[in-house]
Length: 407
Image (cartoon, rainbow, N blue to C red; front, side, top):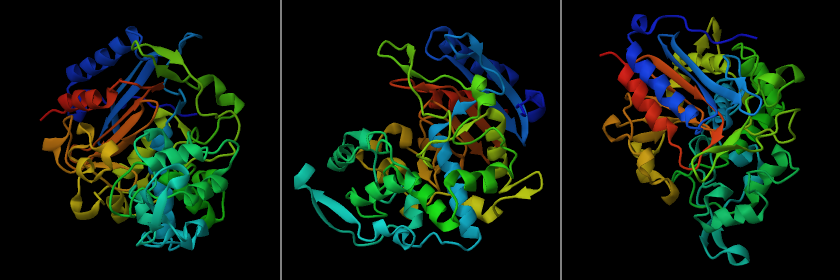
């Protein structure tokens, strides 16, 4: 069991120690006010950990502190790992980005696009183009989430038992077949809508590789990178290090809530949000990306493929706020494009928080976040376990880290 450790003083990495101290005090105040149970934040420059801050509890009731080896449910930070799995298969020639998805998943052979109505009176038409692998990687396939409550197709997902993206008791294959039976919100490739697409990618990986998703991840990504604490479930020896999950209450406090079940191998292996990881392990994953697909002599991807993953892939260089479905046309998406399961800063002047051009990364439903900033050679991760209502950690974290970058 390896733990993340600080490797260099902030000043030695061109970072302002006083600014990083302000960062710690800012989030420590959130803990003291009862808005967060605890947190871990790591800032790395040139591959060296220059700041590692921890404060608060991984389990409030038990009084257990956040430690460097705490295990966190990273939820949607699983998606970039799934993208890497697909890109591994692409590099070995097992698929291409422009392959129709139905070549591997026949249930998607006849996609229907929503045109009107609701419930049993929903009207559709045949899609004018097939769903491609690249549409899934960029969330432009026309899929959605049941939780949006903004479009009639969202309601159809709820009616199909997909309130939490999986029909109770179903496995990945069964769940993806349900997705395929539902209408698309829009013609593939014409809008951006964050969705269940990465679960479809997970099933695609299974079919193309002939392995369960957890086995493929372990064999091709996790073990090669030395991510020994990352997986879809934990073993008994790890249980004491798992952080409890909380949710933000209406009054701005937190309360315990049931989390993604990780005690024992789950029936549903979610490529969208199923992984548990540690700060050390996710640092290894970020370092592989920062170094162009290689880490400690182990090459997963070519530099060209990592560049492809981390480049804006939206048509015509579109920005999420403009190209997104109505639910995504918000200030937080201004100045951002989208690569393969990562957002990409394409216009720093428009972003909600200060950001380096080309910065890419993603967040998780329990207020975890990471990014890689090539322009400053910086990587950042933030770990906690709160499902938010109004809590906005990410832009504050971006601003505070940016203040620490010495000019």
